[in-house]
Image (cartoon, rainbow, N blue to C red; front, side):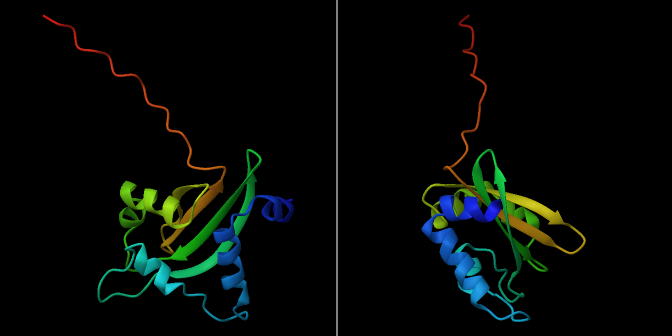
Length: 133
């Protein structure tokens, strides 16, 4: 089912990522070094995060496309930083929402999950006006 939704919903950039990654032969590393560098996910002097797998699933009728990275040297909080998360939406956009998913803390696996249909609207509670004294 996810292949069909991929064909219908994948953005041009998501399609390009999948093509770039699957073009590598099995056993080759799919690095995407320039991507992680541009996103500020490389700690100077440390190893680059390595793309381990792509996952695709259907969520609420939209394509959820997750890039799973092994990040031995880049801390999770760097990946999950809100400014950086918003940058993922523009970098991998337009028309996608982005969230960071902790996949496996022990193996240091983190996912950038892109969902078609645009950024999710975050519900915020209305701020009560302060009473005037």
